[in-house]
Image (tube, rainbow, N blue to C red; front, side, top):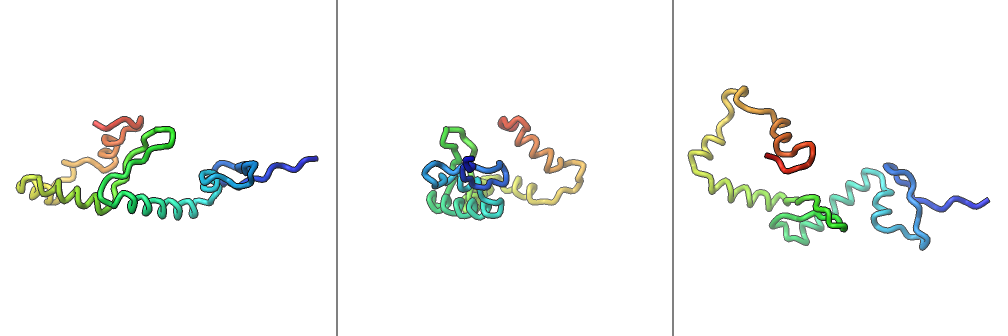
Length: 126
């Protein structure tokens, strides 16, 4: 009777076979980790990406196969862009946007706004 091949335990997708050489690929290793460890690794990887791109702009996310996932905007870059755009808005518009909403019936819930921005089919919003 032959023993089953060694595996890495993957909580989400079941066990992964260890390659013949005995060393898992980085992706296999990552997939074998519990969620808390994955979060820690993603946090560190994101900080590395911010450092690589200087924290000044959009960080593109593209899969090795070419599928584009989107962009991450580091907080400092988002603030810089927001400050720039806000400064370009006419003063009377900035003043109006800065006021609280007087009548909540004259607004839409955040969920509805997100539905418009991110349709269920993943296509660009209106």
